[in-house]
Length: 101
Image (tube, rainbow, N blue to C red):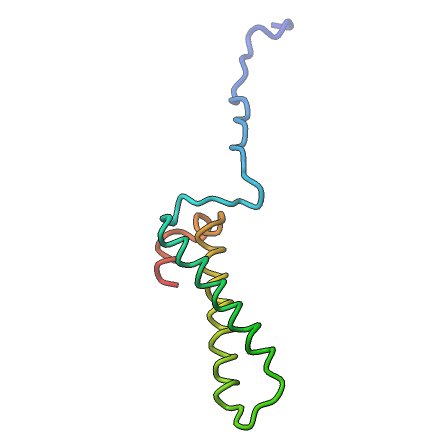
């Protein structure tokens, strides 16, 4: 019994961790048309924010401030949606929670 032949290994060897993409980027949760639409939405809302910032002088600025709020909100929300669907956050949260959001 001193040679160790009686005892077998009882634990399984560690499995290799699945290879992760840089920053967890994946496109399997979003279809190509929807992805293109969200990317275009982010680009257009960013252009709207930039165009609004170009305006230096206005006589009635309430509409301009409202436009700034809407375009900035659309830009940030579209980036959030892209981040959730194109990274591992989707799998970490779970499909049910993402659908609720």
